Image (cartoon, rainbow, N blue to C red; front, top):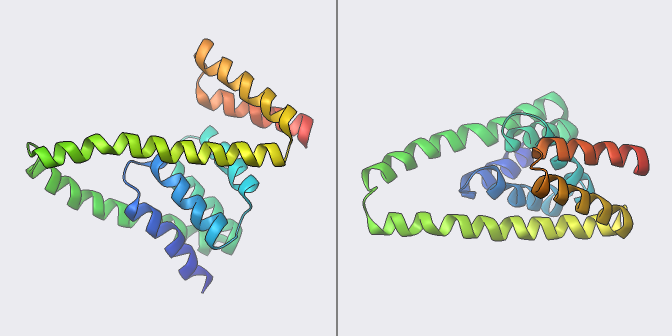
Length: 176
């Protein structure tokens, strides 16, 4: 039954999540943390941070890690397949339809709504991570990491992977 739950936990977010990794991460979190309880919000945040530091799409990395953590190699395979195969099939079908109707005002309006929806979902995910950081490591460490990350990203234009790596190192030294 765990294989079926893994399949559903990654199949549904990848079918309904339009917009790539940033759009489906909150949906995956809702399944993995909220519905099935395979991870705490803090563990999910740490897994996401580590996954963002590595190359390749985030959804497949998250699926592979969670699947392996829950049910070993078989679980990893099921979760990755649930992430990749349905999305590939749906995208091929949707792209054909969207391309055929690319000049339609309805299609153009629909496409304009995607970014704001993703922004709201990412804001909700960020707020959840902030709350988990305040409860876990505490306000001091959370503030230090947030301020240093913001300065590194905005002022010095440092690549996000290096910022995540620095936060992981900080956490390993001061919170480990």
